[in-house]
Length: 386
Ligand code: NAD
Image (cartoon, rainbow, N blue to C red; front, side, top):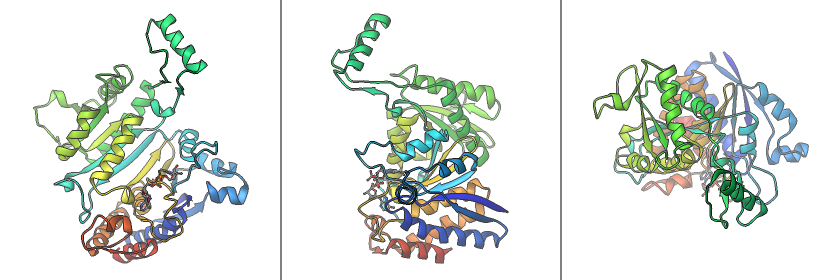
């Protein structure tokens, strides 16, 4: 089977980590399936490379191809500060309605972690990508807009807000919440994961974050009856029921401490946009940082895999970036395509290379007695360890 996969190299370290990652992905596929499964790579232009070749950061040809694409993978894309164009990543998410950001967080033996038992961390975060305060609907303090809104709140809704306040709007819908939580539940059922935890701050924000929680439970009752059981209905302490998924919820601040002290109790986490943003990086730090954290963004038709870090401009062109996040995102893509064996080969190769303690600088800093290798060599070591 030949699968068409579009790729975007990305800016900054993007071309280097892609050059190191692609041969590893191809070698894993060849080793796992001996030509039975193959990828037809097609490059799409975006970011600086696109600008150089076409004068546009996101050319129409790229948008057209992605409209019908099923699978794509990308390196990081930069957002020049103060140059007046919005983030390409945010634009891509919005153009293609990539509403679910999915980030697995798993410990790799050998990396130093601040936890006593990092090996117990094996979670997958489903972060809503299209709603919430993250949309940035804001009004600066003391502007005609904020004054008008404050007057409206006072006169029409009887709500008193300090006249000097800056304001932000937090839109969250049942539709947006349900489709994200639906994906999380489907994923947990398909992969035999024991639970989905809804992360929210519904005790304070009753209608937005509280809505997220309530819509999640309602969805589970309507669409997953018999397959999904609410934690409340079970004996206290039940962590797994074979063939079913347990749905629970935790208030965000409580969840932050529980994932630290009782990581084994959490498997899939479904979070609104802003909570999801925070917990993704916090969990990545628990197991060794962003350099090897994979991720993807999904719509109903497109699965868009990506290195989760940025362009690391200071590392660009120095052969020092870690291609691990890109490579593990590729492994995640294989899993998504049903090519699990290739994904497993990559994960095992990563463990072997980490055990050999020849790693890129970001990892060497977190390992006792490790030698530093460049981006290209790290990729070669992974390829050899397959
Ligand atoms: P960054 O992720 O580039 O860097 C944060 C830290 O992580 C830095 O210390 C950096 O050296 C390190 N790091 C990043 N990638 C690494 C790698 N492959 N190997 C080892 N260490 C790595 O974040 P930033 O500095 O906030 O952003 C730089 C640019 O990237 C900005 O233009 C930003 O908009 C963009 N960005 C893009 C994405 C994306 O495309 N998904 C995500 C975040 C930031």
